[in-house]
Length: 151
Length: 151
DNA sequence: CAAAATTTGTTTACAAAGAAACAATCTCCC
DNA sequence: GGGAGATTGTTTCTTTGTAAACAAATTTTG
Image (cartoon, rainbow over all chains, first blue to last red; front, top):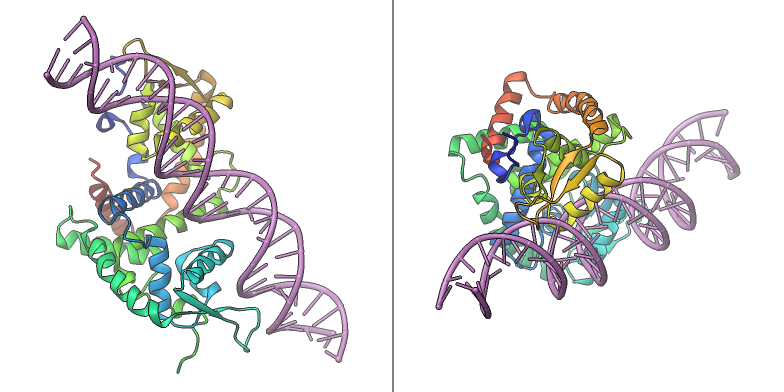
């Protein structure tokens, strides 16, 4: 009878509780939070790592393409790349091909660093969704890929 | 041979392409982007709406509990609630019970507004994931709920 | 019961991300 | 070839969200 809600479990989300967009926002926040609890200050944040990983696997990729694939806006990408350049991770090159564009490559030093970062990053990623069964987890991954429009 | 990646579809994500955390970040960005394309400036942003919706369904809920459920940090919640109060959507009340806490309720005017906002909000939410079959979509919703630890 | 520790919310200072305006280059089409 | 329009990246300004230090109230504990 009109008792104020005192614990998060008692909160009635109503239709919000089955709204996909809402659920995904929650999921992402949860993953991000646990990432910092567990991986802590392992120097590279998820956003930075994903940028570096994609550059590792696609040397010479253009800034615009990188941004499209990772859904990072141009203005923000400029800042990210500059920061990574300042840290000596990447180098930029203007192709003769199209002198507006910028091609990004890992520096020789960074190649090994990023591979190593991949070790713990994917170890963490593999632990995401461990409250699901293996089958469910795989199903979820597949559905997410289809949802996004990958593969 | 060594041709720079020119289109997003050609980008090789390698293991990142099946990493759940990464996929969810992408999914959420995609949903958010489409939200603004389609719903545009329908006055209420997703974050604001979800706060108001939860207050509607849990009158007198405490700020801290609201934050826990929606994964919004205390500092940020303070700002959100104050903004909503300035717009006349919510009122705050200090319970005798615990004079540190704040109980939030919708103003009488806001109740109808939020119900109406629910109309278009959930219409949009229902359209999320329409590139999946109905069965897949339902499966995805269920897996997401389990993943998050709901229900 | 009183001091210590915890919880709740606010404030201030900062980081992450986006929007809009801009400059440079390139493409298209007459 | 030469302008109109599109693309690419940068800059500046604003929004959104977090972190850390704080104040007030509450709970715990010796």
